[in-house]
Image 1: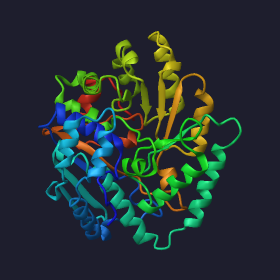
Image 2: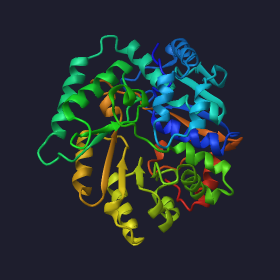
Image 3: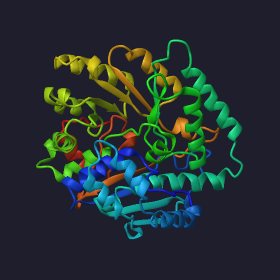
Image 4: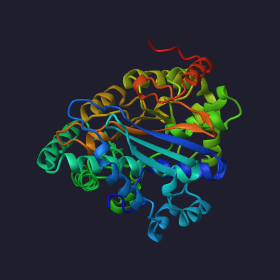
Length: 398
């Protein structure tokens, strides 16, 4: 079985789930799967693996949180005891997820049900699809090449003058496999070190954070702000509503705002002096990261906030080379964090799958992300997308 613990997921799933429990317990949602590079050279169809994927999901739905896992979560200062009590009786239900083969050779994965009971499906289901795919298409994985590439990345990071550059693992959803993910992390721990003097800041994966003594990292994801389109008082205020409800739940903790659900310009219009001071920083996940960073720093200065007191997190398709370039441009001007995903956990010489599971509806209403990278947008209702652009004054992309 691929997933053997419900902690084998990203921390932000738990931080968002706690908000859902306390603020939106009755919300109903729908998610859909997409492979962005389906049909590309070197990418095989997923349909032949549907039965295997279903069997792995069935195993996932048989898992419960162990006592030591609940104790680990409870020890986090921002996790509340009633949420841990809820997780103690929690179990994923197979009736909320369906997987089927399409005539095109691709697969359709739909997750539909109460948000509180479906939010934990995304990351393990993506990890399952990846591992099933690669263990069938790469029966003799090139681990030698993977270790060579990892060694090159580590040596790049250990270049003179980069001692204060720290990276984090964000690679659970698109990893080659669980065993390789763990090997990568153990190698990084040994070679880069952790703590104040190390260069490995932590991991988004809660299971490996617990297992390897790493710091678990994460705050909010796109689905949270997307759902607020249906849950807030009015659409134009949905981003502000999302940030305010987050602050209400965490009272200053987990203060990194996600900036790209409506594009950078719309984010900056809403991220006023109050939010500049209230939140510790912002995370980049689409568009040009260098332009984004410069705009964030200028925005802080325009609001009379010292950028050196704020953190910019970069997490969009990073490679080690790009990470170093960003560090060199912004070092000393603000606090920095870098989350590297696929390039760390699925770089063995073959083409990785670019797969996502995104929320499409909440409480029966369409929700969407209007990314600065248009290929990342997912919405089945073009009229709603047009309305969203109008409401947030976002120009259409030709």
